[in-house]
Image (cartoon, rainbow, N blue to C red; front, side, top):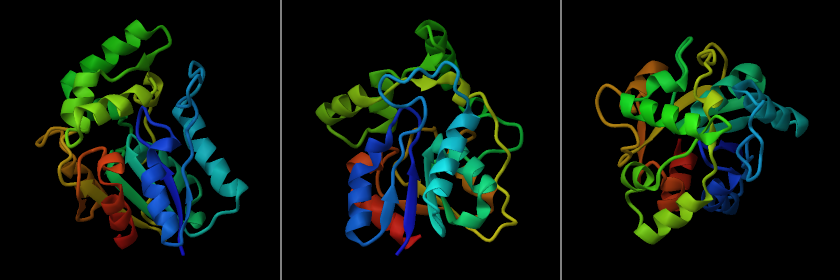
Length: 236
């Protein structure tokens, strides 16, 4: 059986993985779903960095002496799992980017986003008082979780926490694919969190040099299609 370490995207805590994790555990696998530094309710993110986030997952893997890990990152979590895989490659068997950003050399996530997102992030961070980004409900409903009812959209949105802006403006080294682990790109087929075209998700599989594998659902299939997402993770 496999050991999965599931890393969330921006604004989420480890709780977001629960429906997927339950299905993976029912299939006999070990699953860890950490809430990353700065993304727990009440966290003060002021002095935290992306390196702190990466280090927390490295510490988890080393502290529990995990090996043959399937490391899964969603969205912004692609930056985190890239740093983790580069730091402890001997402990990783597979790196799975699920509708995730794949870092390029010297390029932060902010620079990979279309201009409207850049403007939104900059404005909300400036207004926050602690350099954090909040996602408006209407953006969440229309681009991230469009395959859920309005009631479900509102409930999940209410659980999101502000994302430290510095996590979007820091770069990490690209994935070192000279190691023995396998890299996979899993793409939700109805994901419009990034618009198709120049800024779409397809460029990231190309950057990895792999053919994307599709899974049902939107950017937030962890809520709307958790069984199908878990099955897709098992297949890849």
